[in-house]
Image (cartoon, rainbow, N blue to C red; front, side, top):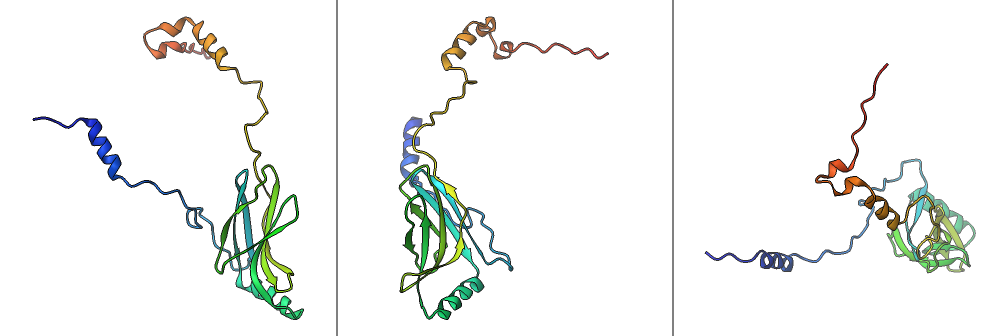
Length: 185
């Protein structure tokens, strides 16, 4: 009986297996805990890479209502929900859809500090924040120019290993010397 080559079986399995989708993060996958009863809200900002940051937030209904009362008390009307992004330049606003609780933000500048505020924007352009995030710094772009002088170059490791007499022995345990027995007094 003639058997199919292993390579063909593997290729067949690969063709049948679906391509993996990029991982999507959610509150559940990040293990984000819900607010406690006495908390008014929170916002968290973290760097994803040199050009992007990720924010998630939760605002208690009582906090939103208190800010809306403050807006109405000034004779204004809340028009939309906005995320205000503060960085090294002038802050910019991102309109948020209803029910949004996380957002990826293209900041476009590496090696800078950022923070966000989530709040209500009036028709007149006044911003009333509900919550403010922590500061997050995007990493610099490229390889670090910091060198640790304690590290030996690979060439030095090879030369050191080649000079050892144990290198050409028959088994790898012989490469390491036996520990000397300690004498207790």
